[in-house]
Length: 96
Image (cartoon, rainbow, N blue to C red):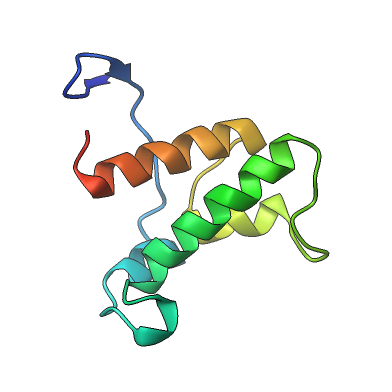
């Protein structure tokens, strides 16, 4: 268990080291993705998609949880994936 700056406990997240997300984080920022790396852009958009999915709304016709798991290298159902992606986002922002 880790602790964030506020003292709350956070579970460790296991990520596959060969996943596409980690490769995309290393790429330089591009104009096509609002000046951020492709990995961060995908993290933000997939978080929004998962929030809809947990409310039983399909974000778009081809959306699959399996693709999210494969891209980010994490496991779990939609709610666990959303928690893990929000934790990854906080780590990248420097909040944890």
